[in-house]
Image (cartoon, rainbow over all chains, first blue to last red; front, side, top):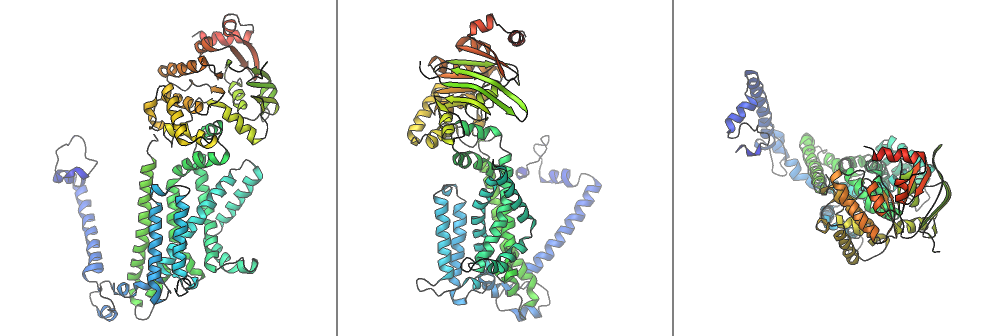
Length: 364
Length: 246
């Protein structure tokens, strides 16, 4: 019964739901009034939401005309059931979209697997991700094994968002570690130069960095070094990610007592052993909450690639409801895209909470 | 005459403009047990931290087993492997179990295979009387137990010299003797030991020589009987009366 309410006062051991409600929400006349007003308000909002989203809604595909003439004003999920493929796959050719779907699933599986402690070794994790990216690339790009070639310019939707996020994280994290180590170098000119680079990049808007890498870089770099626009943007974004993450890691390192590194030195452990086994594992543990935060922000800001002409899940959603047939169902489409973002970001933050509990073991 | 375990000659150390160690000359023979004492700020911790390069000296010579301590990183790592150190605050690695604490450096720095390293570690953990704690994390142990693990961890590297930097100063009184017992046992087996400590009973029992430091200088050194019963220097007498007198 009230067992799932952890804050029951100790002096009331055998109270039931009614007395609990009464002591919590109806203790005085004013309490009761406030409770009733707010409960009514919440109920009203919930009821209209349920009415809009479920009771009065249209779910069937290709029911745009029905939606238009619908007098109840319920949600038109028809836009989703009709045009979901655009959201998930963007401009990817229709007959080939199964490839994009498999590539997407492979990437998600790789991400989930790399969250399992069994894969946390210097051999398994890189192997897993290299394999994941290879499969993704072969499937998406094609041109091998009789698969039709689909250039990066036509990648889009959720697959593209996941690809950018994974690539930025994987490129950015090692870079962040290198930056953080250079930042605390014992040679002052290295430490100061790195600090300056980090500060400069952090002071620029992500948008301008993406733009620079996508549009300006080809004029500056020699031919052959430029690569596809998509990869240039990923490199720029990874650099941006690395500068923020480097400061997060540095914060985690600074929280360590000096005795930790001294003890490692006194045991005769060399620099890389000290960093790899003593400093970084503890720094990452200290820096876990802001690191998860950084991943969440990075996932959501992949939407910015739309500015240089890529159709990520957000832009694809807008495109899907942007035609004359469906332009009345913009809200429904945004809700759907929002739901996709929510699923990913919420799993990420739950995983972060799991990690915090797990890593808390043995430290008091 | 065999070469000394540690040889320090005309060594100076500065913190900025502060002259922390002034013209230190000290030879410690193999198997010798030396206790260093002195008031706080006298440079005794700085001195033993210079021996394994946790602090850098600015002039003079430090040699450990004949290896000169200079900017050569290989020499520094070699000396650190030969000289184990025990700290005031234990400095165990909190993210590793007791056993992992003890096997990490042998596996990584001595390239001993894991099985053999674990066997050695268990032997030393048995010797410091806590083999049953091998799979716990340091945070689950008492201060005295943590310090004994720290000693076992240093011993697992099979060092020829042990440096103790106030190993009992952070312990609750009832835990001091369990750590000192381990140190006495080590001394009886012939380990070369340099201990910064105020445990004068321990000094009397095991030390071959007691060194008194003040203001960055070695003021007096003598065998324990002579040092405690007949100190020559006025400052030594004042110091001894302060730590024994209460």
